[in-house]
Image (cartoon, rainbow, N blue to C red; front, side, top):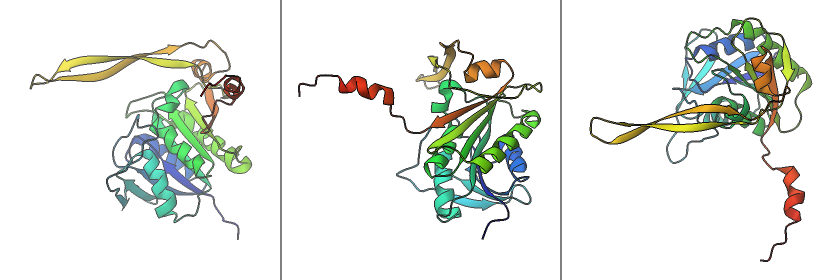
Length: 257
């Protein structure tokens, strides 16, 4: 029997009470039945970390009326794993959406992002998955101008599916004057990190991570270019990290062992 509404798993890395997940939940509720499984505290920068060696807790909570919500003590990836195996009991939702993140996850940031790692885990589980991020780190972030695109992209994924082992990384510039959607590639960039050394009251050193985003890519088909020009960037992402173009090169090496 065909379901009357798609079932949508909503996750994030900013925590279950973050404004971004509330905006995403409410938007997805216009499309289908929403189930939320999110961390009990902020998990930004956790990447694809999972919890091993200690127990995980998953508690049903009643934070927003009318939503089925679960608070997880683990990472964003833990949230997806527990959702599939415990909440859905092996059944797969029709869509997994992560975010809306407070802060961009463009370019190299996709590797560090808890938001995107949750979406990647959804894709690994065979669920069509999308990560959404907005260029505003504040708790007062205004998501309203992005929501029609959030909904439209989700509807397109539900209607058309995604290529095998692929998910979408969607980023929004912090402007109300959005020009539309650009399908992009990930820009080549890196963080030039510095560690600010300080001393605590016990005379022990500690460090704060700082850094500068270095863009080494002037292409006009990248997510960085799209965002700088007020477009919504949509990058198809894969979790197969094989450098397929390098295989013929390595096959040409003469191994002596």
